[in-house]
Image (cartoon, rainbow, N blue to C red):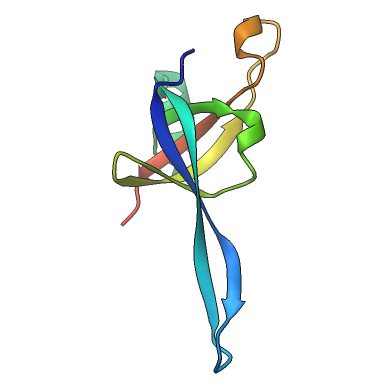
Length: 107
């Protein structure tokens, strides 16, 4: 799959302490290239049984993902609900890919 889009992975785990002792959480934004895939019907219904609402799947290089919980795509924010590394024997060109299954836009 070609990676023709830009996705920004967002990590909110970085924090610092300011001069008066308050903990300040900072966003670390990492732009990566991605492909896009729709959520399959079976995946949608299986997730709905667990109160999850997957909307979109981003395909990225697995070495660029370091456990981020949020992503931004075309000015919309998504929550990463699951990651998946496809079987390596299907297509040799996609052996470094990882799927990020994302739920609805965050406010």
